[in-house]
Image (cartoon, rainbow, N blue to C red):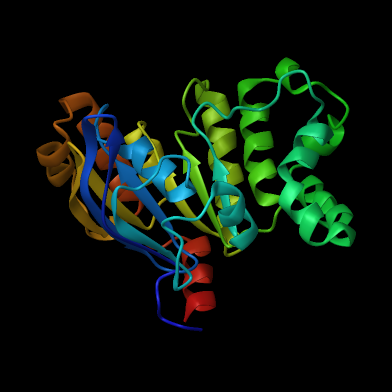
Length: 269
């Protein structure tokens, strides 16, 4: 397998009108890994994700996906190319059933290879049994955790190489957050590369392999989570004692590789 990163972000700038939000963001995401983007509100995390997804245009710089420059590519073409997006707030269609949401998510797959759709749908249902059980239920009547599973399943149904997951734990109860953690861990075991933006730093650190810390539209620190310490987090993110303690506990739990990380390392060797 090639050593070329699956995703390469080079010095991108972006904004809205006269306001520039991103001031030269750069980072790389190795194949089969989970990269986390962390920062305080207003740091530019979600705008970065929207640039990667093609929702917000990049003013300068470049985004390379699997060696191809996708900087000016439409969101639909990026999905067809192998990128999936779980947007902030999940954004399921509340008046549509679970299966209808998944069918809409599979739009590009059905255009490209209609015969593949049923197998892809069954694959999502196998991965998320709760969605199979509720396939005829309207998405708006589901719990926050179930909607999070639906949003992730909708991104995965196109069988992407990379998924962009923006603030997945926002608004979830502690129990639902634990369920979401298990869902994303299972996704990671399949070898899908992931970029995760999280305001809940302790939750995010429990998942990611590398951490990219942002301040005011730039990445100020990048490195493996195993080499990150709570003081670096406090210095770059300005977090308080309680959050620093929670983040420190999450970091301590990541010092020894977990089974899924060892499996990913074997797959990408």
